[in-house]
Image (tube, rainbow, N blue to C red; front, side):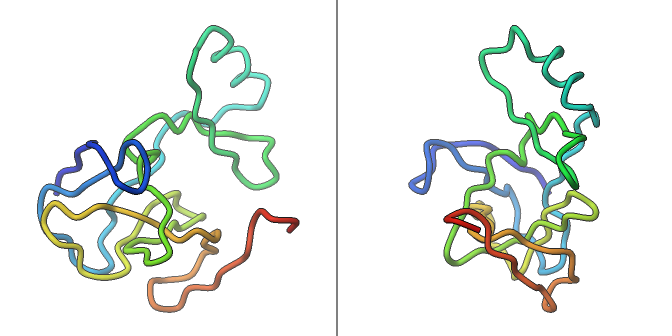
Length: 124
């Protein structure tokens, strides 16, 4: 399975599959280096764009500048984010050239089909 980035009606750019994807398949992953906040600040001091993803209590971050950063939010998600593995997993069959998207609420670690949600933002 391959991924491409192209224009998206949801957001300026989105992540799309190049082939059909089965339910339960890993579709993307945050794989950047794990850094302390201070290390990340130093490493990105001159960068015009950063995409840092906080882990746990936020004291460690991942440089998330990769394909996964283009997976947009949706009210009808086709993938979920597993916080223990930092992977996006297909919730259902995704068609060839399917636009990858995830839930608007944070996904908590559970296998596909047994997912628990925790609300984020808006005063929580």
